[in-house]
Image 1 (cartoon, rainbow, N blue to C red):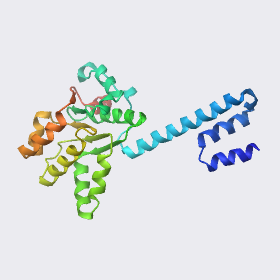
Image 2 (image 1 turned 30 degrees about the vertical axis):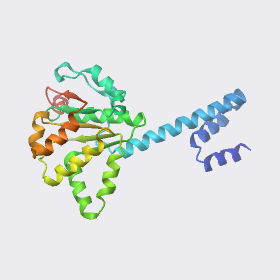
Image 3 (image 1 turned 120 degrees about the vertical axis):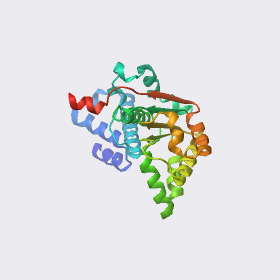
Image 4 (image 1 turned 90 degrees about the vertical axis):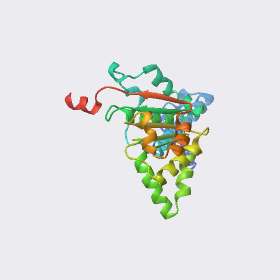
Length: 243
């Protein structure tokens, strides 16, 4: 009878329940549970399994470049990092408020790692997250315009709770890039959050975007209700190499 029950669980995709029940049978602990305790044990196991699989899907769909976690962030004094501020970001309440985070600093200082760590935490809390290198995203969208998949790509970006734009400002925007960036930011304004990382201070983003009118419109939407993290100090990669 147990084998038949296990097979039915498997066919119904109750993998957490299947694993818990099978383990209980093999360990001979089924007699240790009352009926209500066994039901609770199986349901809790299925709940945890589905939650973990959901997090795995979110992390896969986010397409992070790095593996990062909030627990592994380093808070050296010379980096100008406010630990309390980053811990507040880790609860991801800024996403529910449609607020943005702007992380600036020199190359190798840890901007992408911090952004990814926050994004990873958001996935664990059930938010939809998408990571993109800003230059590569612009190139991808230009190709999408040519092959007819542009609307589909933009719709995918729009439905995310959190969009991470990494390496913003590495190269100036052309007219097509400005228009696409404007569309992305306009779609997200008041509907979703953005984390932007850049080697350039925010004051120089106007020059990178290029067109003053367009830059005003884009940055007004990004900077409005945003938190800033301005990193300082030596490159973390350089420090790691020296060690």
